[in-house]
Image (cartoon, rainbow, N blue to C red):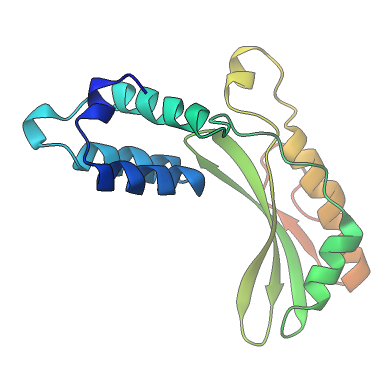
Amino acid sequence: MDSPIWDALSAAERSAVDALIRRDHRIAAVARLREALPAGSRPGLHETLDVVAERYRELGLRFERRPTPPLDPARLAEKIAALPGRTLAIEALWDGDTDGWFVQLVAIMDEPPAEHRLATIWHGGDMRLFNGTVPPWPEAQEAETVGCALAERFGVPFRFADPLRAGSV
């Protein structure tokens, strides 16, 4: 890699950054890279992201997140059945990170009281807002369809605090 930023890192720091990248911890890799350099010579965020993106490519990994494959309700039902306790509800929750918005599908259990993530649904970055492909958000549509099916199978409510939808079934 031909980068003065990368070249300024010790071999140990390069290895640590690459280890974070291999686990797809992009933001942690950016932070580690910046913190490994002296305060007066730390690159800006954009320059650091460019180095991390290049490391992804050199390691044969994708820097851009891929859309999640369609959910399999039968497989998710098996996952729920294996959880401890009784299922109280299925919920869909909006969440977001540096790549954009996504929906978490979770099962709420009674004993012990816990929220278990079943799946993350992500169909593209927020650039979709600028090119007019959302709304409707396909993540929300998939979460509602699968969430309702799971809730019906387990005889529990489905909740989705989505301002674009009715909200619960």
